[in-house]
Image 1 (cartoon, rainbow, N blue to C red):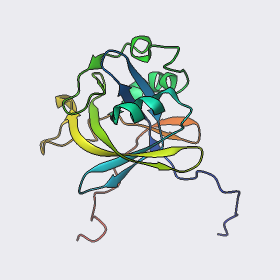
Image 2: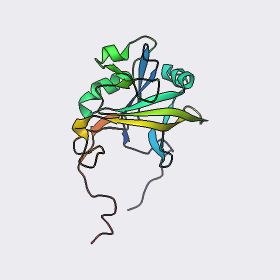
Image 3: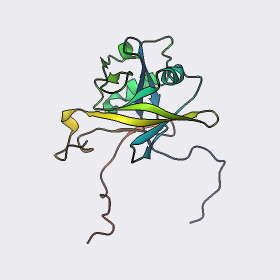
Length: 185
């Protein structure tokens, strides 16, 4: 079947809908990020794309750290709210009824209600255009016991993962296979 060429746009989707907490414990902020990726396995790193005009941008640059919190699909309304109001004018923790939780390795706080929080030191900033890419060195991963599997890692079957694509939020679907299943007999 032939494909039709269309105007270039950000056609990589879906992406996890994440809540990134930043700033100090006393005056924290949350920004919703859907443009993120694993960046490196050793050392463990991830990346998030942030527009310099966002309030959280300067908080991350000043503190040199941030926390990527994985919210669940049941929090879709809160995730959307945190991406559509400014932390300059709103206390997003209070408005979303989230609890500020001290991180283990970084100064930026975690969101207690999110089952997974990934604490990152800001390793590098890459200026791209409308967004800058923050590359974070993962210093700690905090996981709620209720979503841990028998292997001590997050069990995606227990996590109600929220993803974002083309302006819409979705719940992650069924498992279709595991790594290497195509070559196993």
